[in-house]
Image (tube, rainbow, N blue to C red; front, side, top):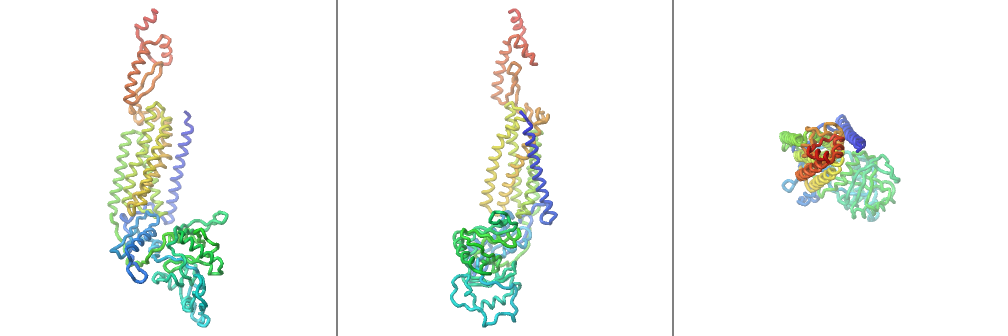
Length: 576
């Protein structure tokens, strides 16, 4: 059997694994040098401590918040501060009155903004736009020239919504001074309002609400594309509305596309502040809209998160904020790491005892898996704010046994092929064909279990499920790109190929017993049943040997096989 193909394939697989290591390490070093990451994984609330905020609800009309409203608020805030689901923030209600948000570390400005941005989200049409600052008193419109409604407004974009009082407040409204105070004011969704867009430096009179934020089904950011499908290099935010929002948005865009100037804009309002006021370029009847502008990757993702996670049924204010210590701390983390090292040591001892030098492949494979897992945890902490909790550490410890199980399955398949009389190089290839199906099936079950656990659980259990699924994927990568290629290479070495007694592939350790078949042929048998059959066959072979002719014996001797001669038989043959 030619070995050029397997050797070439093994080297190619190891090269790909090296490329993965180099790219991951380069990204990590770049993040550390740029001050965006560290060489250590981020720790969760139970191991590092963090910040606790108590949010007091505010309900329109001054009534108390219901438990249903609080429960809904908890779910939405959890999505906002833990959009990736792995930072393990804890959001709970307190005494049926407040919402307590506990998160690891110190929240950044974006996270804090998401927590505070807790009023109803609204889509309002722009009626008129003006300067960001207040108009100086001596330059304001005289009372005689103030706009006055001539008839009842026909739609939300109608200028008849503008009363003299509303226009006067619009000119006197100073956005820089009022910025951040919008959440303190409750705006009637059926009436117009004055609002500001701090990003664009604009001030608007907005019409009544036409599409509530609750009708947004999904929102995500991506690179914008032209009508021909080419990437334009600009970031955009895509909106997907539910059925009710789809109908409402189609009616609004049908009207706005015909209006001139600022009336062509449709403002997205959160906490009384305009977070975007895009123009309407076409009728959107499919419930899918795209917001473009001077977005960066970060700003487009922030806007998408605000839109995607919807609006709270009630608004909140931060009543108190304090730093809290770790609930478990460094001692528990140290204990968890020690438990992991003990597990790794026991697996190593078992591998050496069971597989001799072949067990070193298991140990090195586990080390490769550990390095890949470490790189993944650190990079995920940087990119998606993943934080390692004690439950996550438990998932890593459990994974040690699950990963070692893949190697054991593979090694045993190889031994089975050797027992059937195959040479090692052939046994490696045939054993791999049989083992990889078993390994993939087992890992698919592990990953499926991790996904189900992640979906149905909250808090620390999510961390356990996440690390369990992550290590299962890494196990597949290591088995395919390291363990199998290494075995392909060592199968060509003399130490393993000839079955050295310490290689773990010694025929005597595998229960392989040589069996003479006659005429200079030898085969092997391994099991007890084979041994019994071999003993019977050996007797038959001995009898056949006794009856061999002189020519047959000479032929056997020519092939280097020593036979025992029966003197009396030789004498009889000679006399004959």
